[in-house]
Length: 190
Image (cartoon, rainbow, N blue to C red; front, top):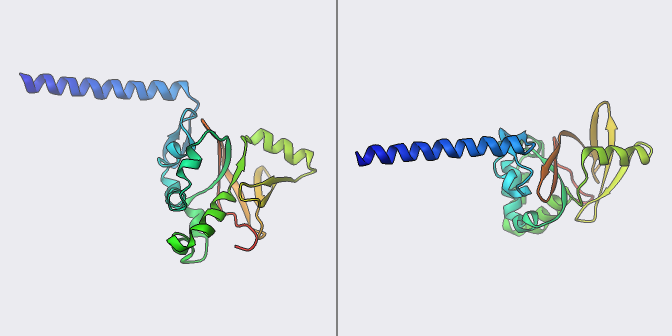
């Protein structure tokens, strides 16, 4: 009898948890990234750790000691490369960047993907239009990303001349916004 009650209580708790989760998703305009909903009420790190497409980025952020920064109030605009974007780098690059002795270089590359402030897709398109087809974004590491439109996609040109495309825009967070990109942006000299 006691086991039956315990099972019933556990099932009720699971059911209520699922209902609460569904209600939260219904209230918040979530975007699916890497198979997981990204909640606007959660911060960049709280959401990113759930994306199966961003495990390399999350590991890199942890190795660089940037978790606390990306959990802070911000706001930040993060151009978040996917695992496939990291795979495009020359073989061994990610492993080399994750070594403790390369923390400075890793931090430089990661902070090159972050712009202070919340810049959503509409803001970025307006900046591009006002800049006669290009917008200059100063990143947290002091480098420059150049945004432009090609076809119906926003593209970023990095300091090394590499190009990445925004594949998912406006993933809103409590402390900023994420735009998923398909290549790792590299600052000059990296």
